[in-house]
Length: 328
Image (cartoon, rainbow, N blue to C red; front, side, top):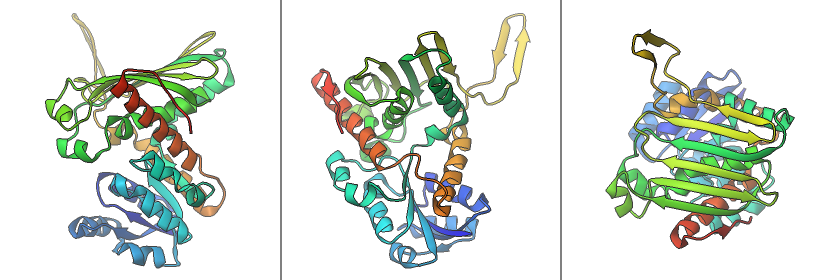
């Protein structure tokens, strides 16, 4: 049995805490959050104790820490946990600044540090990756990633998110690297704010089309929108030499209605916590493997740096209307 602590009692912290509590190999011992009512609520629902960060990191019984706090604290809390000898499960992104994140390589580069890009753990995307790598459809040539949210987040969240490229598209940048099997060498991003004027006033964008190119000539097109108008749209198409591999959306149910006017299916799942529930559970299972010493992190520090590097290059491309090189 492994004792762990969760830092952050917000929406994503609650998901990870629930998955940790449900795992037979884990005991959630501490909840850490500066907002006492939130910490107490989560602790009461999971059987954990409210603790300070120093207490949690100083407890020799704690083997691992989940960092699910605000993004600007991810790097610092992860480094402190690693320095205290804990395994770390850190939410994306690694940090809001690439140069600051690079300074942590000596601490996090070869540590038991797992960066939680949850989409790699989605069973459908894992199967897609396996079939691309198998070569059954020939070599992958181009990739199309569609990631459209149902509706924009609150403007107060937007203001502290780091911008759409680091908050939302960063998932797609990681997926692109994973599925392409190589790192992009250049990016071109065309973005705008046409959904919510307040997002533009906050200096951010809500709609983007992004093109990544690799050294071997593979191309990935990413489509992002903060508002689809029809549900949580998460599709990927892999165009290969012999054909197409495709992952479609999940519906709220498989019930269909058929009548004189044709057929009608159920709506798309409308929330990321529903769409990726299996992926979040699989992440926790992987973290337990790290705690047991039976696995190395499937996603680590260098993956986080690459995703940030692409995000910052995309922001520069949008600002300058030019192709921008990408490098580690």
